Amino acid sequence: MNEFVNAVNGVIWSQALIYLCLGTGLYFSLRSRFLQLRHLKEMVSLIFQGKGNDAGVSSFQALSMTLAGRVGTGNIAGVATAITFGGPGALFWMWMVAFLGASSAFVESTLGQVYKEKLDGEYRGGPAFYIEKGLGMKWYAWIFAIVTIFSCGVLLPGVQANSIGASLDIAFGISPNVTAALLAMLLGFIIFGGVKRIANFAGTVVPFMALGYIIVACVIVALNIDQLPGVILLVWKSAFGLDAGFGAILGLAIMWGVKRGVYSNEAAQGTGPHASSAAAVSHPAKQGLVQAFSVYIDTLFVCSATGFMLLITGLYNVQGPDGAALYTGIAGIAAGPGYVQTAMESMMPGFGSYFVAIALFFFAFTTIVAYYYIAETNIAYLNRKIHRPWLTFVLKIGLMASAVYGTVKTADLAWGLGDIGVGLMAWLNIVAILLLRNTAFNCLKDYEKQLAEGVDPVFHPEKLGIKRADYWVENRAEVNRIQEATGKIDGKAGLG
Image 1 (cartoon, rainbow, N blue to C red):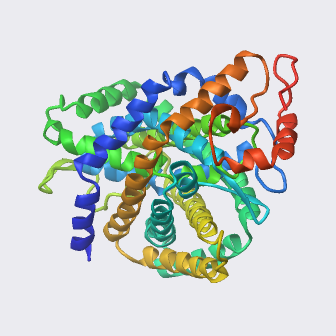
Image 2: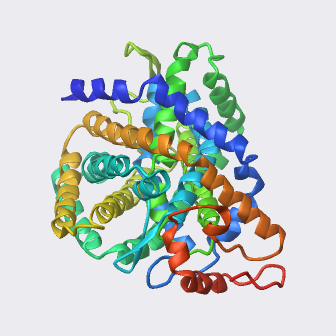
C-alpha cells in the first residue's frame, strides 16, 4: 500500500506542481503589486469589522474557520518532516510559499465570495461554485467537488488523527485505540451540530491554541536568542545549497518546503474559499484580504515557531535521498510530533511534551472539523438541483471512520494519503483561479477605488461586468444591511 501511495504522489507532486504553486503566487503578487505588503494594515483592521447574521458568520469567525483548517498537524509534524527530508532550508521555502501564497489566497477567497450562494439559509461557496458560474464548466466543477469530498472526507482526516494518536501516546501513554474512540465521539458531537456550531467552536478554540503555542515557542527562542542568528543563517544557506552539509539536497529542500508549505497554509489548494464564502461582508475583496493574512498567521508565525525550536535545540534529523543520515540529532524517534515534543521537553522538562500533545490535539482536531465543513459545502453544491440528504450522513460516518483508521495506522501511510488529497485539489484549483484571475483583480481595483473615495466599499458586480454573481444582485437589501454594520470611513457614509 505504501509503495502504491508513494508512486501516485510521485506523479501528482512532480516538479510541475512545485513550480506551478510558486509561479502562480509570484504572478499574482506582481499582478496585485504585492497586495500582501501594501494592504497589511487593512488586513488586520478587516478581521474585526462586521458581524455575522442568520445566514453567515463574521469575518473573524470565517478567519477562525479557515485557520482551523490551516493550523493543524502540518504546523508541528509537517515542519518536522520537511526538515527531515529537505533539511533546514525547507523552512525558507515554506516561508516563500506563504509570502507568495498570500496573493493566491486573496484571489481564491475573493472568487469564493463573488460567486457564493445562499443555500438553505446559509452562505455557501468555494471552487466548485466559481468554476461553474465563473468559467461555465459544470463538469469541471463536479470533478472538483467530488475530489474535495473524497480528499477532505477520507484522505486528509487520517493525517491529523495519526498525529493526535502519536503525540498522546508519547506524552501520556494513551493507546491509539482509545484515542480513536475518543476522536469519533467528539467529532460526532461537533459535525452533527451544523455550520454555526463549527464556527463557534473554531472561533473559541483556534485563537487561544495558536496564541498559546506561539507564546511558548517564543519563550524558548528568547531563552536561546544568542543562537537565533546562526539558525537563520543555516536556513538561508541550506535553502540555496550553500551549506556544506545540506548542499546536496537543494532540490529536496525546495520540494519539501513547497509540499509542506502548501499542506500547512493551504494557499491555492482550494480549501480556504469554503470558509471565507460563509462570511457576511459587503465586498468580496474584504474577505480576500482577511484570508491572505491567515496564511501569514499559519506559516510565518506558527510554522516558524516550530522550526526555530527544532533548529535551536538541534533535536531533529536530516536524511539524503538515498536514506543516508546527513545529520542526526535525535535517535530512535520517527519524523513527526515526537521531534517537537522532545525539543520542547528538553527546554521545559515536565511540561514541554504534555503541552505539545495538548496543542497538537486542538490543532489537528479543529482541522478535521474544518475538513468536514469543506466536504459538506461541496455536497451542498451537488445537492442544489437534486436533494440527496443521505450524502451528508455518509460523509459524517466516513470522516469519523477515516479519523479512526488514521489514528491506528502508520504515519507514512497517513501522510502519503493526505498528500494525494492536497495535490489533487491544488492542481484543479490553481488552473481555475488562473483562468478567473481578472475577476478577482477587478474586485481588488474596485475595492481600492472605493477606499480612495473614503467610503466603505460595497460590491456591485453589474458595474464591473461580472456575470452570474447572483447573490450580490438578488440580495441587495441584505448586502446594504451588512455594509451598515461595518460602520463608516473618514466620517462618510458607505454607498448602498
